[in-house]
Each structure stands twice: as structure tokens, then as C-alpha cells.
Image (cartoon, rainbow, N blue to C red):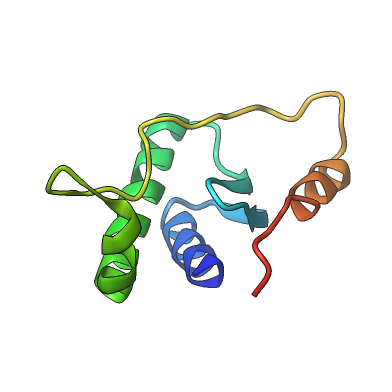
Amino acid sequence: MLKELEEVFRSVLSKWDSSMLEFDGEADHVHLLIEYPPHKLPSSLISNLKSTASKTMWNRHQDRLRRFYWKEGKRVFWTGAYFIASCGGVTIEQLKEYVRNQDSPKV
């Protein structure tokens, strides 16, 4: 599912004139290192990433997701929370290495 999420995110980002430099995920969250134009609102971009990914993943994996992400009669895939940080004081390569070293689920 992480590979599918990555594909969805890359597709959305391309429509925002943006790109994903690195991607990885853990059991309960994902990490994206993205480059996007300064005139785009990060909150709108994140909202679009999350809503598109949620719809896509529910369409592809409804039976599996229903077991874990069905809360009080609603489809849930993401919380409303997210964390954004700009990269100052570190290199892009250091950020990529950080994302690569996350505790990804093993297949």
C-alpha cells in the first residue's frame, strides 16, 4: 500500500507543479520530502494529497481498510494533523537520508 500511496502522491504533486524528492512510511504515518512553488499554500497541498490518497485507497482496498479505519460509520484514513518543516540548516541529502531511515513496515 505504501507504493500505491507514493504513486498517488506523485500524481497529485505533478498537478501542483511540485515534486516528491523522497517518500517513506511507518505503521501510522508517512514522510514526504517535497519541492513546491512558493506561491502554493502548503495547507491546501496537504489537504489535496490526503483527500486524493484517501479516496484512492478506499476505492482499491475497501475490504481491508474497513477492518482498521472504519470509525463510527465513517471512512477514516488520515487524521486532520500534519507536520510541515522547511529545510534550513541541513542539506537535501540529509533530509532524504532521514526519510529513508524510517521504520517502514516489512513486506
